[in-house]
Length: 319
Image (cartoon, rainbow, N blue to C red; front, side):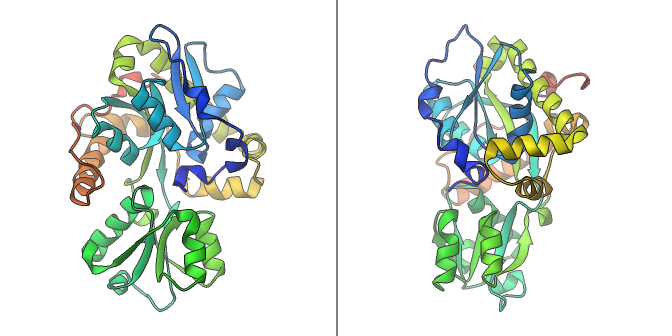
């Protein structure tokens, strides 16, 4: 299970990739989205009809739906993680990051057996990790911090949804995962040794559009980004209302929504201006991730990172 699937599986199961079809070159900006707490401001904007007719949200069940839609041309933009954006860019799709919607600040976790007391203790241990996902990026960053090479550990490539079972069977000594798997492993005796708050500004969720859409329909892109910030403003100013709306939409409890929100940082307009500037955090981290992903065989070629981010679509202010 990809990380972005865990929140809201109950409603997502009723959605179909068929909704991705029929993107018109002269129509509204068709934007792929799937359940994840960092994308909730756009869902809220849609709830309140704050997205004009220039933008149509195209819901899917996971990031794969959006990535497939972008590759086929069925949609012209999507909400993705930065590493997912790099994967698409490495396949020749020219994308532009127009907003940063969240930064992982504890959502991604290294769970270990109590006998492992520090990162050096990971050497020669069996680590469950979904290599073709965000947890793969997280593991390689953990190994960098630990001063270990990927060959120093035994990687057990498993979907995160299978980590708890592997743990209970004694097949792994550590897991790189996220909620709700992290809590399941903690309840089974696991210890949280490291999380994404220890490597700040590494794992980003972003709004991306194709370069063609950015050039051809800049008004729609600006409308999309403005809608996100208006939804974010409502989430921040009317937290109680927003939490219950999210819980109802996702089919989860309000407490689960609050827990999810506590593990991410939702950047405001000023933070976005810093992140998206030339040679800012997005382009710097994208180059770092691209090199890492190339070295570990996660992508086949290094994408062009120059001008990956574009702050010109950000609103001048949020009303």
